[in-house]
Length: 294
Image 1 (tube, helix red, strand yellow):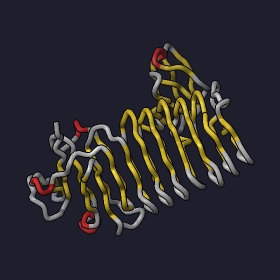
Image 2 (cartoon, rainbow, N blue to C red):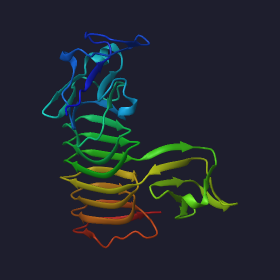
Image 3 (cartoon, rainbow, N blue to C red):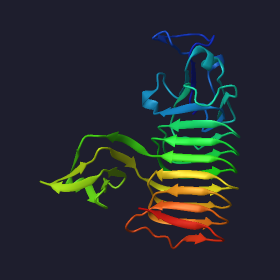
């Protein structure tokens, strides 16, 4: 059964059904609708925000563009052969424009060569991301159980799964938490709460700190690279990590159970120390190094 995907373009000359605050228009004309897609290709410097279907302003999958009139005019969306193509070659890095995608599960998101993009709020069981040569890809507030990342020469890749931060003391029932260290509390097996100090009082875990962060814990992350790359996954806790990288590459990671893979050349791996972390499957060749982060 085909799912109709509506294209919502703010401020463009398309048939308008409704407007919000004079800034948003929704198009349902057949000429403006998109074919169903399971992959996203980004050729431009843009932020892409992901939302669930339940939050969609229309029935079914929806894509909207948010920004100034000039920014919106520089972004085009097309969908062919199951791929949503976001094209914004003339948008400068650091702009405030955003593309909002309301969808179900996606298979792949690819950032094209030399582009800078930020992905926010992805929730998926399994996802493959690709950062083409010389690109810079950030994934923030992500919640993906099984992530595969293909990072090409000269690319930068950052992923963080922090859901929220707070400066207020947090109280968590003892039965829901397992103390890993005096700074880290495992909650309901798939979330991690980090503070400055954690104590147990009257059947509750009390998390203290000037900044308290709550992270989603991924099941598996598989990172493959070519050439020299930079990877920052130090704020993306994962149970099992597989990483293969070399040359002058540098990576920061946070694994709970196991790190596997091969580091060659002068590659530098920085990993957060965890009490039961298994490094037996990590193969260091040449002058590659793996260094724990206290």
